[in-house]
Structure formats: structure tokens, C-alpha cells
Length: 224
Image (cartoon, rainbow, N blue to C red; front, side, top):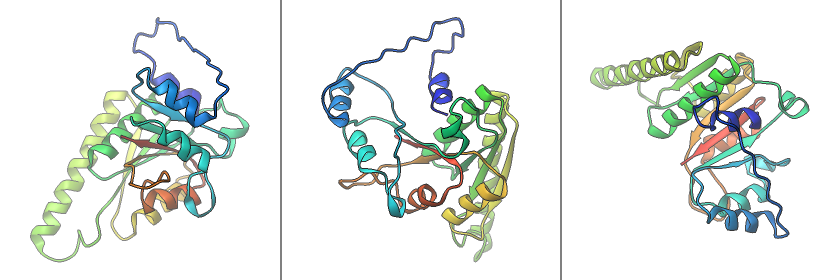
């Protein structure tokens, strides 16, 4: 999984060589990352053996590494075949979308991964609570937003030449909708756009924590 992510971050020129630099440090991992980050990087990809702790929390090691980098993050939590067969591509990708710029960036990455491994994508839109109830004007606006977001996902998939389908849930909390769709669709990878929350430990909100704790699939959290 990590190999696929690194591949899509390479330059678009397919003829360009892929250079990999390995640097060894005697310092603890978080200190080494902080020192290396000062050289100027646009993205930190974290993929270590132990990603999560009990209760949907990130392992302390992940939190320390993330705290040493102020830029965008990609936290990779691999499970199942992605651990036993790391070079095996995911078979079916799920990307939750909300219409926010954060979720749209995650969808773009999901489409790029799907294009690299020739995998299908499901874009899941979870309507906000009460969006389909109450005043007719509110319902109309909610449906227009839903249609606009789904249209954007289809156009994005076409741009990447990816097979994609859309799904909409309005009767469940976001965490339940994401986990339910992941189980129902036998997805191997969930790509989620998230935002860092204030605090000493790495936290992306309750929905992300629930997905981290209960997901049957591997996960990539993308945080600006």
C-alpha cells in the first residue's frame, strides 16, 4: 500500500528515474523526522508497524512523528493482506466525501491510487443530520449539494480514467455509514480527508477515531 502511495507522488514523467534516499539516524524517530523536515518537504507519509492503540487512538509513536512535522500528513494504517502481501494492490477503494476541500483532496488521491493499481472506487456521501427533513427549501438545497458533489466525483473519476460508483446515506451517523459501506462493499482501502485537532496527541475527530478503531480495511488519513 505504501509503495502505491509513494508511486503516485512521483513526477508525472514516467521516464524519470525514481530516486530513493535512505538516511539513518541515531536519534529517536520523532527527533530525526523534525531534523529532516527542516530541509523542506511538502508531505510526510507515516507507515509504521504499530499505528493504532485502544479506543481508536493513534499509537504514541505516530503522534510523536506527526507532531514533529507541521505540513500535510498521510497516515497509513495497513491491515490484512496489505501487511502479509505489501506489494498487493487494493481491490476496492472507499472514499467518504462531504463537499469540503479536505474530502475533495482525499478523493483526488483515492482516484490517483485507483488509476495506478487499476482498482474501482466508491465515493460515499453522507448527508448531514436533518438535511432531508424539515423545510422544503432546506431539502432542495441539500439535494442540489448532493448532486453537485456526486457529479464532481464522477468527473474526477473520468479524468483519472477510473471506474467509480457513488453511494449516498442520509439515515446514519458518518462513522456508521463509512464502516457499514466498508463492510458491505468488501473494500480493502478507505481514504479519508481529515483535519488535525488541537491537543498533545494526534487526533482527527470522533469519526476518524471510530474508523481507525473498527475498520476492516486498510486506511489512509490525509491531513492538511
